[in-house]
Image (tube, rainbow, N blue to C red; front, top):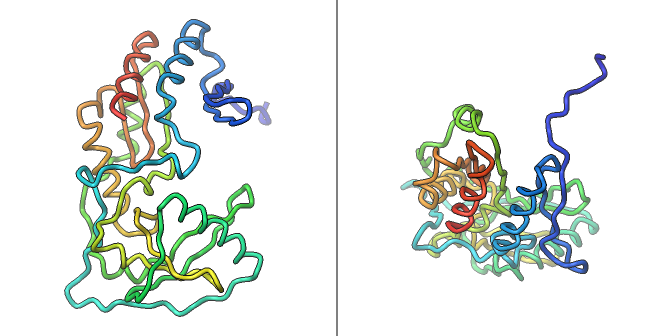
Length: 258
C-alpha cells in the first residue's frame, strides 16, 4: 500500500485548435461530462486567437497600458562584462535562438553600447537552448519596485471552495511587455563568436522588477475580476467558478477581456 500514490490530476483530454498539419493542442479534464465538454470545446475554438504557440503570434501589450522602465541610481557607472567562451556546438544553438528572437522582433542589433552583459545558455528538457542574460550588474544599479505581489497561500485559499478551475499560463509572458525606448540600450548583451551584440525591445527574464511590472499590468487588465471569478499570479491565470454551469460564462468573460 505504501507504493500506491494518490492521483492528484485528472486524466487529460487533448483538443487540437489547429489542423492535422499544424497541430495546436490544449488540454481539458477527461472526467468532464459530455455536455459540458462539448460546450467547452466550442468556446475554446471560438477564442482560439487568445492562445499562442510561437513567438511571432504574440502582438505584445500596448505601451499605453504598461512598459518596463530601467531607472538607475544617481552615481551609477555603466558596466561591460568581459567576454566568455563557449563551444562551437553551443554557439550554433545560440544562433538559432537569436534568429527566432530577431524574427519575432524581441531583440535588435546594438552598436556603441555602454552597458554590456553576457548570455547564459540554459538547456531545456527538449534539448533546445534558452537564452538567459546575466543582468546582475544592471540589477545592482536599479532601485527596487515595491509593488505588492500576491501571496500564493491566499490565492490557493481563494480558489479552494470553487468546483471547477481553468488554468492558463502566459506564453513567454514577460516578452509581451515592451521596454521604454530610452532604456532599451541598457539591455545590450554579447553573443559568443560571430553572432554579435543585441538589445532587448521587450522585457526579458532576469531583469530586476520584471515580475512587479507584469503583475501591475495583469492587475490593471483583470482588476474587476480578481477575487471574484479569477486569480492571477504574474503570468499564471486561474478562472474559477463555484458551479460547473456558470464556468463557461466566467471563462467567456476572461477570454473577452484578453
